[in-house]
Length: 632
Image (tube, rainbow, N blue to C red):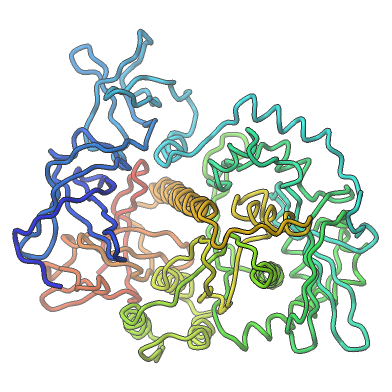
């Protein structure tokens, strides 16, 4: 609907701050899926922080864009800010992270001595910014900045640590659980993984050809009591956060990496889902029960891939070598069934930084493509998550589902255009189906630009979310889906475990689409988004640090996003992203089209998916920016 210029409306929304000094007010309109975004001029933003909830008047401009004015603080969600000290006429000011505030604030030091350039974390209270602590010399400032920017929780309180230690007094005893210790069981993770929460077993096929896959998951709920200090902290965090060079776990390390982790040769209480997989790859039955397991071997992805690809048996694999072919068969069967229904693979190429052990400095950046072992474990975990979702649904038990909606026709049109400009024919038609998506996924697999194309594809498909309302997961072509397999790292999985155990122990007084569970789901969504943004910001900051020594170098790249002020490109083979400002492009000026698919100039257009050659112009680590220019 066209909005007349000068129209106004009273709104309440959340503030976002742009490093250039202005901001935007994001408003979720009542009784509508529409989101209103209103520009906030710098003067209106001076006394606010990113995340503030404010009331305002939004005014429509002649171009249809909204501007916010008369902002009034409703709620301040942020308690801490990161910044660097600036001295002016003997007074200390804090130059706050420009992703959080657009102005410097007077810093209340309570008598503590600060020097110009000190990095500090300060508390916001009663309209004042008061020093909490100084970042120690030698600490990674960009890491501290990201942690505070996104409101992440770093340390555990003494009370929480004490509860975690007391959990060790509760043994991993068998009791009424099913004893799986005699069944060959393995874990498969990266060598650096410490919080091991899933293990797999397989029982060979019988006369009917069906085999049984057992996915056993650490029984965290047995040791983290609902409503305890430990549980309250885990719920507040909602997820472990994996920042390059630092992990902020959801649970204290004494539990996540030790007492609950499925380390080899130690007995561990688990929840197990046992899947019967017929010769056609169909899961024809699922049984869920409490169990006691013992991992026979800790395997890593590389050695499992070596077995799957060439039959190599590593030394740690020797105790379970007889069951490895059955794992391969189970994975192959599930892959056939997944291919028949469509969807896309979850495993993707990732860029990982390496660090000097002595200094902590970034020493390298390497791309890690997924292996056949990653694909196998992904298929097992997806099958387990789907089976649990169906198991709970058929029993009428409310739980936290993971939903991914089908993209709307406009997004499908954008995907068609993106594919064509990338050199691929998608031919999706008006409605994207899981099988059409799978066909496109298979097209781009192995192509030179696969990483960039997958980046755009995932963004175009939209994001999945948690909700108590059951729905399909379009990207996986799953009628129902949830998260069950990582309760050490995700609170959503822990909530599912509690639901399962209540049912297994006889509870039947369910509340249909429980409002309390939906409230929990919304909280987890919010914290998961903050964690994802923090992980991205940390990666971008390290990209800027890494590329600072490559000024002037040229790289082949591909356009992955279009913004009003330029285009974002991803360097081939490095997965590094950088910005090419629109005002630096030849034959300008350039403006984005209505869908921000193309950057359009007088005689030239740059479109998402296009290959370009760029050179590194500058970097800004605090903002995680790599600025590029066309190399022409």
